[in-house]
Image (cartoon, rainbow, N blue to C red; front, side, top):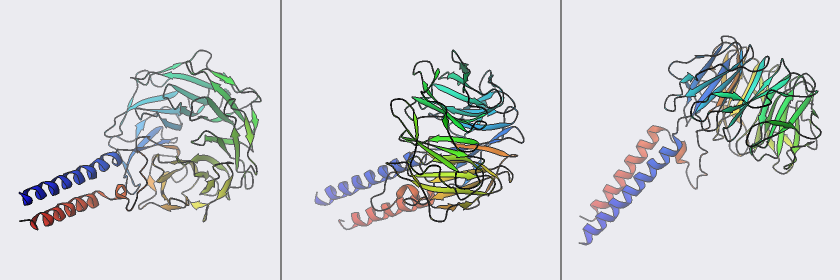
Length: 410
């Protein structure tokens, strides 16, 4: 009886450990995909991500056709749809096959926009899409049909950027309350409040706000407290402008010490890691990506040790994977994507094995789907970072350990 009771206890312990192990696998092996807008051959390249290494593998059927001169690609927060701003005209929309990452054009795509669409973003609730039209100096706003991804322009769209000209980039705050636009032609940032039910845009008091030379990219920190702007005509000290956001109004106030030097020339793109700890900037004329730590209370940027880091030729776009583990950079001239792992705690970048990865011609924008969940903070070892072989070996070790314990009671 004693032996049977202990055998049963060890068997139960093994089953719980086994289920727990593969429960972790199920959480961390969710497929995540990278999409790259290739301006030169009117396509979007799609890749699956190796969750352990960050390496990219092109998915079956890639690249997928877009409209003329695609310059921006984004994915809806639920990972169901991808949208592409075609600088030659229109916005392409796709459904994403969850198991493969393959793209299928939405009925009616591409959808009409203003002149020379240069950037597209989706609101955090997935209800609205916004497009910066560089040629017509305005912002198109759309509702997104939840089941199909079809775009319908909201009443009053497109919305003027006022005295702001050549809007190159648009983003939305994490709470969905505000939209911000980088106006390359007028060295300003336009700010809008977003009507929750309709997606209509209303300029914020004092908008547009002064930026650096030729602002080309704008992003918001995950806590919604700060925005960062890459000033593309900068050759040094004025590379990134930083602002605090008034929570109730969306009014922008420059952060102390802004603008910040990138250590590179012509910063074209800026992004912030999901945990809000780091900012990364692609410097198109110096073939590098700058890395900064972000002061959580003030928004001040401090260069990371070793920054800037080498990229391919003419990096035009930079993004961070949603789990905060990897950085991807689209290199326009070398037609590839550089991939890096991020050192936790420091933000230092290390090239991923086999990086860079080939794309289509002249990749202009890169994004990652939001379905790679943040990895939990490990207590002793980081099981989610094990390779598939590592998981198998760990499972075998558990089996052997339990078998050995059971034999002691026979």
